[in-house]
Length: 212
Image (cartoon, rainbow, N blue to C red; front, side, top):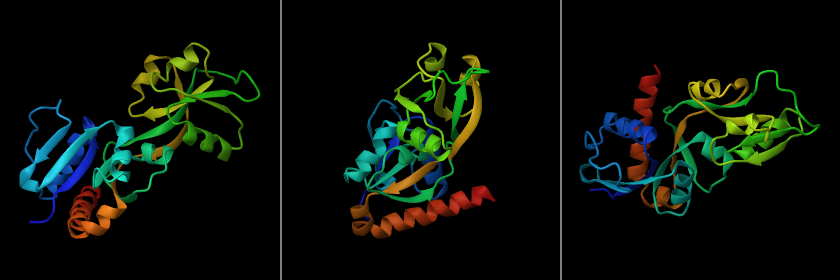
């Protein structure tokens, strides 16, 4: 039997979708994991162990070798440069980063303020547009910033746009399309190359088949 693979994943939708991809790729995972509160989930028949972490922490577990493999959103990968290999676009949990503001909002200063959970990505985007802005990092409830005058615009993840509409904001620009990616620890890729390459090939076959 090949060595056990340890896999870091976010809880919730991404975990469910990634686990289903693994099942479609022929890995014998439980139909449902019994206790969603567990942070470590065993899948002995597939010879896998899952670590459930916050989305922004997944690349850290992989970079430091605690997990061989991870599933991370492209938004996280763009914001924080990590020493990991991005080996496959899983094409799950699709969404996008967008700029939004109040309707008819005009910048309050020469260097308007932009609030975001993704300050590096936001700053890079506006620089590429030739626009000078002041980026304010927030960790949650980004939509609140324009409503209380903290920022003129926001850069945030958009899935359906419902949260923006509920708070009276309108999307003005799309920054980048986001999907979840399979990432690998460089040392694990050398030490467990057969098991990892097999997983990448099997998942790629499923992903490419779904895309047809």
